[in-house]
Image (tube, protein in one colour):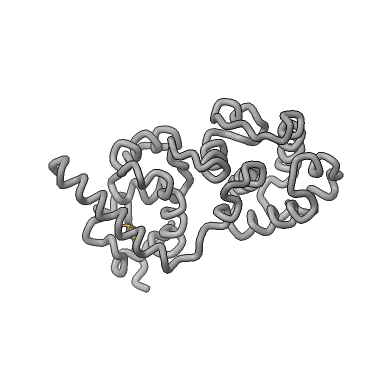
Length: 223
Ligand code: SF4
């Protein structure tokens, strides 16, 4: 496809997603926008975990302590009881404690670079980018999770062989309009749970059907 046509296709995809997103429930992590410490803890808890469980655990933990100085005073039992709905709760208990101790030692300030955050236990590239986005409204990168990767491949925006989030981020940044970067993760999460479902995407009723090459899609939902 000529580059100009491809740019128009991608822009049309983005604009339709923006319009439709008004009808969808916002993502749970968006509640922690502008609150770096909560965004960091919630993003770490969200790894390998469904949104409902992440929200439940994060809210239970923040009800006990909503800042690093109070969180370091919690017992292991209190933290575990709060976060037990998430996957790998025992490991994440240690990560909660490590993050709270490091941020408290830093005067309560969450680092503002991916490199610094990457040194925290339980915080990889994806969690760091998500934290910077939610906590500090930094949008130099696109948070790549399973929805962003799966739908990016189906839409022909990401190479199907791509497995690593950083590479998908680079590919998406080359094709998406700059103003889309900060919204893309939330749009994909909402779109991925309402329309472009993991196993049976709702292609026949999808508002992007005419723009989508459906790469790798083998079965669709007729509902
Ligand atoms: S047409 Fe199907 S594969 Fe393409 S975005 Fe829509 S639901 Fe996903």
